[in-house]
View 1: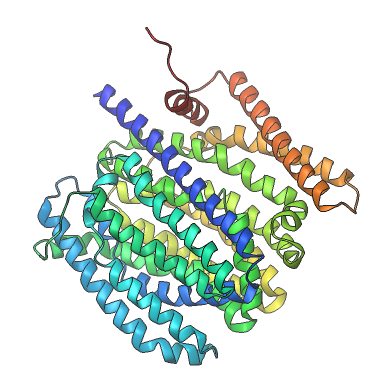
View 2 (view 1 turned 135 degrees about the horizontal axis):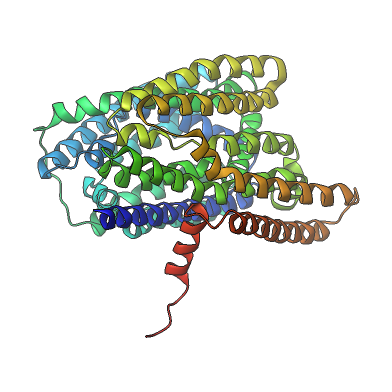
Length: 498
């Protein structure tokens, strides 16, 4: 049994790292795309499409029951369960598409921008198509086949990148972004049926049981969406699309190494943790190791972006985006805080207690929403950014408190998991900030680029040296550092022939 547990732990760690690699590549592609598009399009273009996707996303979330999560958590699923989940997804997709299409004109009137009508019509069609995606691809996660999951999710992003850039060069308008979204959705739909042999059929045999588990997840999704999108809604409603574009690009850049890791980490953790949900001690040990792995990557990357933002923005975005610098620095702090326990929802689901996840997001949202309104009212978009930081701090405390109600999660164990990463990141921050303070005020573009590359290399070396030194001085515990080294050795270093 211990060998099975060890193997499962290795699968979770390997899967988590594969999903983190996927998200880094996805966001890397997305960031490169943003950097190119920032020089071809205007902030207003980004803001307009962002507003449309927020509106469409809200309707999707209002009917999102996370049927895939129910299939993964249930260890006794049959084809009838998958057919039921697919049928429900088709019904949902059709209903949302109709509502979005019928309301598109009124929504455009509300936001006083008639361009939203056509964009929302396109998003309605994509929502309908999305309902017919092959439910069989859930087996990639359920069976912990993360290499296939990696390929399935990455390829559409590459297609989107190529199509969006080509369309932007040709059209020089917001339609390039819409065309890119369309290319992504169509590619993922086709790929699902190419990569997996399962062919779903209509049926509702297990609708009651799937809905019974998914209801709490549905409530959580709605609350999380409101909490995560209210900032953009406020900026889009009370300022203008240009400011919304600045805010969205700032969020994307600042959260590249942090918030974007939470989803892939949870995606990889949930199938494995669900298999051992009854064994709380093993569950905690595996969770802590996963936290150690993610913070090894996220802490230094987020703080690195914070420190180098005054160089990063003019080099990669251009002089038209200097307003993003303070926003990026503030949002990077919030992302680093959030990532430490942002995937705690996997523990709630693995233990069969999704209602605790709902309670978590309800409490956090009850605090976040008034903070966002106050921040917007008194300090404009920078106040919105600080409101997110404060709510992330409190949300972390709430998450720890709720976890301790259902699991014997030790605070000392959590501290011992992340303290080395925090100290090494602090050393890197101090070193890079000192160098930044010594730089002359006037630099050419080439000088800025060379210095930025040098700081990235120096920061990585300084962080890695301090982290490995602390890990060695701690006796090389079986922690996130060891899991990361094991993964690198297994995947990228060939073993000598026997």
